[in-house]
Image (tube, rainbow, N blue to C red; front, side):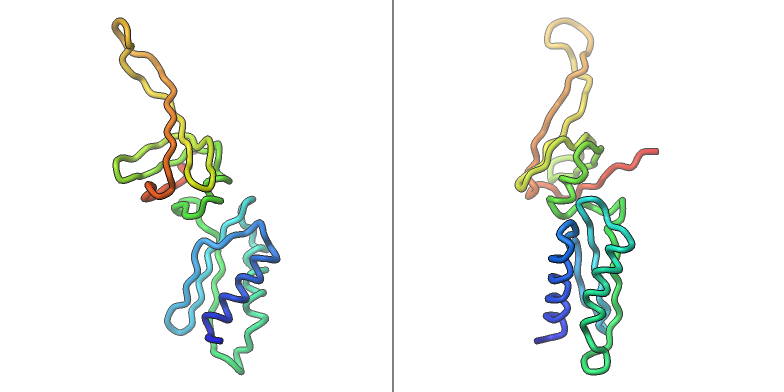
Length: 155
């Protein structure tokens, strides 16, 4: 078993013990620098990062195998969403979604395994008469069409 296979196996076992957590990114760089980025259905605590770190670190003997460095972190608040579970946990929040055609800032009202649904209000010309009216718009976007999506943080 290679070093990467062993780390991957230990990481998967650690995530199985904590099903509320899920993997966003995992790399092993030069000098066996292991970087793991996690997210969770209820966010990620420091203890969650420690638990996953220990699941790996305590099961690899640096004396017998290779030396390594390990960094386990949570996905940042401004990090793009990559996993459908990230969209699901952010239902009700405002998101900025970039597709091949345009960029939309709207409320995320639904997310399933194939797509997300956004809702926003817009001012449009009245169909009859002069002036404008406020209309509610909805758009369903398949994950395959999303180039980047981030949660909009408002203060």
